[in-house]
Amino acid sequence: MSNRHLFEAGQATTLLSAVALVAGLSFPANATPSPAGNLPSTTPSLTTLSPSTTSSLTPAFSPTNVRLMHRDMNSSDTLPWAGPGNNPSVTFSIPFGACSTAFQTSTKMTIALCTKYVGLQHGITPIAPTVVLMDPRTAQPLATWELHKNGLLGGVYGYLDEQDRVVMTEGNKLLKIAFRAVGRPSTNRHWEFYVAESTTIPGLPETVSIAGVIPDGAGNTWFSTSTALVGSITPTGKVRTLQLGKGERVANGLTPRPNGVSVLTTHKLWEISGPVPKVKWARAYDRGRARKAGQLSWGSGTTPTFFGPHHSRVAIVDSADFTPHLLVFDAETGRTICKMPAFRAPNQGTENSIMAHGNSLWIPSTYGFTYPKLAVEGPQFPEKATFLGGLTRIDLVNDRCVRRWENMHRISTLPMLTLKDFRIWSLTTDQDSSRVWVVSVDARTGKETSRTPVGWLPFDEPMQLTGMITPDGVMWQATATRMLRIAPQ
Image (cartoon, rainbow, N blue to C red; front, side, top):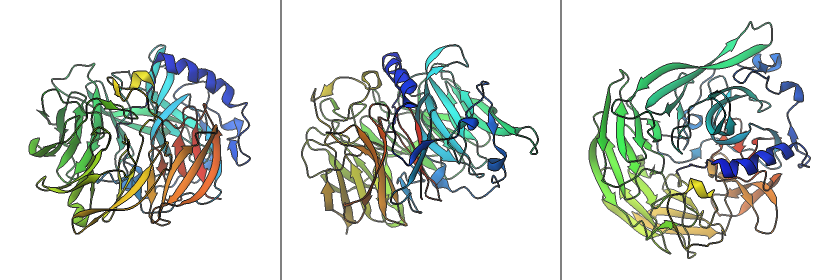
C-alpha cells in the first residue's frame, strides 16, 4: 500500500472547515473528546502531560508489530493479540491533519506520522509532514515536529527503531527523531522532539521524494525514491544505491528481508539482497492499460507480503484490467507458485496490503474508492467507478491457490488481522448513510462480528489510512480530521 493519502491546498481548505465544525458534532454516546485540560499548549513543540499519565510510563518491551507500518518483517498486517472487542469505547483528539499511521514506544506512548493541513514551524506551509507524540490515554497531542515538505510522499513512510526513535526522511537526509521529557517528575512534564541522528544520502538532491524507509534483519536501513533508486545505509552510515528498471516508479511500501528488501515498482517485483544492493530476482506483472479506479498509481497497489512455511512465499496483486490476479512466488527463486483471480467479483482491485497468517491470505478491494485528485498519478481507467467493497480469503494448499470465501465488505482503512480473536478490523462506511463504523469480520468465515459507530462523513472520511492495534487491544485509527482511540470496555 502506498498510503500517499495527503492533501494539496484545494482539499485542505475543505477539511480545515470541517475541523472547525468537529467539536460541535453529535457523536455516539461512547465517543467522547478528551478533557479540555489536557489540550496542547500554545507552544507548537511542547505541551503538558498530566502526572497521572507519567506515573504509568514504565519501560516495557515494545514488539515489532507496533513499530512497523505493516506490522512485522513480512508485511503481513497481522497482530498476535486481540482487537478492541464488541462495543468498544471511543475517545479522540483533533491533530489538525490526517495521520497515516501510528506506533507505540517501549513506554507505551503513541507516536503518529501525520500530515497537517497547515504547518507553521517552517512558515505557513500547506500540507506539512509532522511527527506527533500523543497521550496514550487521551490521544491528545503532547509534542509535534514538522518536517520540510519534499514531494507528495514526504513524511509518510517511516518506522520506530528499538530506541523509540522515528526513522524517516526529510529530503535527502535520513533522520532519527527522538523525544524526551523536559522538567522534573514532581511537576507537570513537558515533552519535545529532537533530531538524534541525521545522515545525508550522497548523490540525491534536497528535493528528492523518498517513497519508503524500512529496516532489514541485519541492522541496515533501506530506502527507495519514487524513481526506483534503492539504497541501503549500514549501521556505520555507509550508503550504497542501485537504480532499478528504467521508467519504473515506487509508489508502495518496502518489505524488509533478513538481509535485503523486497520492492514492488509500477512494473515489477524486485528482490534485493544486501548490504550492497544486488538484484536477486525480478518478475514483471500485468499493470493494465492505466491507473485502475480506486488506486493511486498505475501499477500494483499492494506491498509484498511473505507467508507460508518459513515465510517462503511472497504474494502481490497485479493491476490487470477488469480481473486483477493474485500472484504467489517462491521467495528464494521468484518461481511462480500459483496465480488466480484475486476476487471472484468482476471489476475489482486493491491499493491495500494483503493480510497473511500461516498459509492464508486476506485481500481487501479498494476498487472505486475516491482519493483526492492531486494525490493520484495519471488518468484513470475506467473514468468512473463505484466503491462497492470486497474482502476475500485465499489459502495456499499444496502450492495451489484455493478461495475460501468472499464478501462485499466496504473496507475504508487498511485492515488489520488480530490472531487472538481471529478478527479483521477496519473502519467502514455505507453507501446510503453518513455514519462511520469500526467493524470486525471473522477471518475464518468472512461474517461480520461487531459494528460500533465512531463518527460521521465527511469529517471522519477514513481515507484508507493505516491504524494500529496495541497489545492491550486499543485501536488507534485516524480519519480526515480526528485521531480515534478505540478501546475495549
